[in-house]
Amino acid sequence: MKVHSVEAVAPATSANLGSGFDVFGVALDALYDSVHVELTERQHIEISIEGIGSESIPTDPERNTAGMVAKALLGFSNKKCGLKIRIKKGIKPGSGLGSSAASAAAAALAINEALGLNLSKLDTIKFAAQGEVASAGAAHADNVSPAILGFFTIVKSYDPLEVINLPLPKNVGLAIALPEISLSTSIARSVLPKKVDLSNLVHNVGHAATLIAGIMLNDVNLMGKGMSDAVAEPARAPLIPGLAYVKKSAIESGAAGVAISGAGPSILALVNTEERRMDEVAEAMRKAFKEQGVKSQAICAKPGPGGRVVSREL
Figure 1 (cartoon, one colour):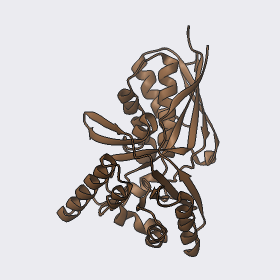
Figure 2: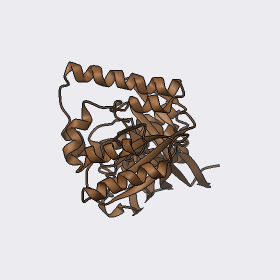
Figure 3: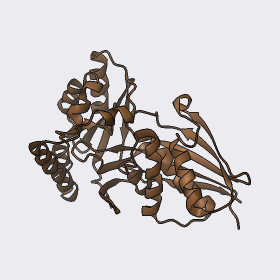
């Protein structure tokens, strides 16, 4: 039976977790984007967007993350049809919570189903990563990987693409402060250093290894000790007013570790829920931003599953 339309959802994600730049990512169970895809006879991609921040997102398929995924998948399929894509944004664009990746991942899942491509999860990630070119200028997979696979992912390599999927300790909590600051991923990537000092490389490798050791040893506090970043975060700090104070407040309120979420401006704190409450840490960060003259939203989440198809119409 031929599928006429498909809807898929994909979750918000947080990339990097400090030391794992463009490598680590975690899916959140708090926020989602949905993408509805309808097959059309006209060989054209049409995009409409509603929801949080939709007015700032281009509907041109060449500049939209879901549109770029659609173009790539249509070309791969060789099918003579078009796609009508309706995006519902539940994740604020430019938040550092994988907003563009969620749309790209949900589009990849929905289009794969609508066109009957039967792509593997890894190939779905590859196509979803193509959408990130629209927002970040690069096909990075650190957000789309957890958006599709769920929970915690490690992008082991890009050529060839290899992704490792891990469960996290049950007592992992994620407290987030989302400040009312406009910060595009492309700008946040533009300030990154082109070369890295050997001492900073050693710092990040050691801390990334510590974070993974914490996961394998079921030790959330050890995971938090592995979140320190000596490369991307210092370069991005000037883009987020009050960053140092907010991080300090998170640690003082009991966070196991804290870092910029993805490209920012959101700040993500890792919480051992057996010892601290997520909402107390999130509120401490919100208050810290307020004291710096910045309004923010406190969000609490747990690691969650990846995207999925939620409806099909024949």
